[in-house]
Image 1 (cartoon, one colour):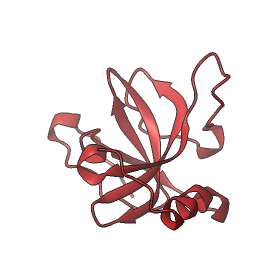
Image 2: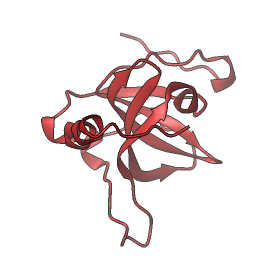
Image 3: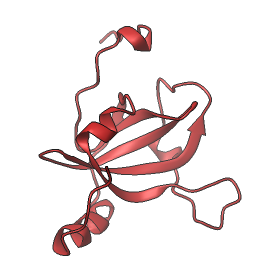
Image 4: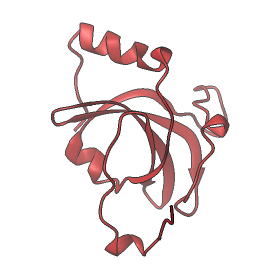
Length: 120
């Protein structure tokens, strides 16, 4: 398969997949988010600690970390429920996919059980 990259301004938004990794805008830099779960109007993501000066075209999931709040260079978020519009405003671009591990969905299960909120 051949992938063609065009300037971001002319690129259509990526289709979203559970288990997919996406580069997202984070102010003037870029981060990597993984979609944990899709629900009507809500996207549950994990946002990794690593940031990039330019939008990455590929990523090795084994190199991504969440870190901790004690890390001097920042940390990620293990589970963040967002309104779909909010996530799409970060202009997600598909990077790669791996199957989800049940451990990655533990925080989502707790959120669901207790009727957690959603970030606007």
